[in-house]
Image (cartoon, rainbow, N blue to C red):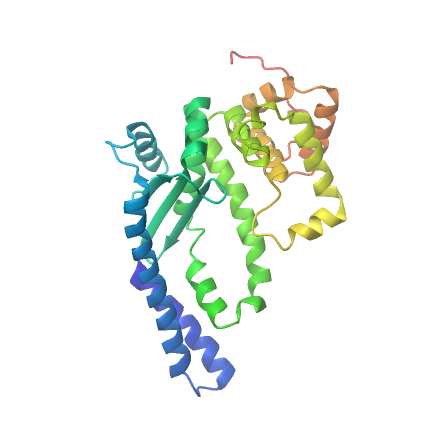
Length: 292
């Protein structure tokens, strides 16, 4: 797979170089691309070696519960490539995944993993399912191109076309995590924890988060600011997951709706009308007529 990616990168740069320089000076960009790719390959191998000495790798012996969840989710998502999962004390953003040149590494902050385990297995499944889904959908397939383009100072010309894809990938990965967890409240709880932290996450009011999602989706400045972000606003991810639940597991959305006050229901109704997962008026959630 890594070799195939390298060849695709070389073809891309050959086309760019030939069209830009008329076939002159092809060798230099190829050598530069080869140098960048080789450097990245070496960097990620050295990084794995460093992690092996300064972090704890998730195995059946070190963290049997987390390892079992990963194996089960890989089976459920039909993703069978090896993924090295490490738990360490400090991780920017609590969790980080990379997939480049045949190396797939998932880093999890120890405190974050412990908090999710305390919340129950569904929270952990949502988090792991989100990132295994990211790997399954190959959302990191442009990483090598981005690195080389950045090195050649060409990234600024194409990055604006990549940002919408990266933002959309967050929504789809959240949806994948929810389908793995099969628990809307647990899934939303993880997103709330990402917004306000471990201690305040369980105290965050759903109505308040939905109201903020409504504001950032309507006001021009938050929408403009999001254009330059690699990820969507977290409150929009929260609202998107509620809307998605209505499309795939209506009973979950009904239970969520029952726990909202009148203001929250009104805001959610407006958000659902404009959601890509919107429902017809006749399918608006009603009190559940079946157990659970």
